[in-house]
Image (tube, rainbow, N blue to C red; front, side, top):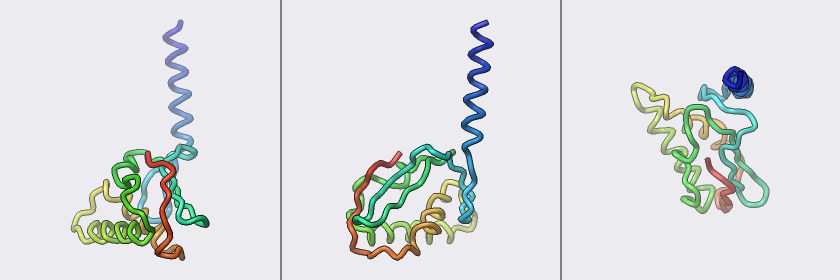
Length: 122
């Protein structure tokens, strides 16, 4: 009897996770888990870039805490990785986070010399 209940609870938990998954519409086609933290980085005291956790990848594999001190440096890294990604003949699925960051963040009107404050990167 206990095994059946545990199995049923597992199914319920899986359904909750599946219900919270969505596909990004920025062109990266990444899947994210709604309400599950991925990263938060404050830029100066007026801006925040944030994303939910990805289904297949971890933000910590792409963003290192305190690697960059200024928005311009992080922005340049995003652009560099994006350009390397799109210049590959066969796009690798694991490069999609760079496409996502480029599509979502590069065009923001954030002053380049604003300091970065890393809240978390999972």
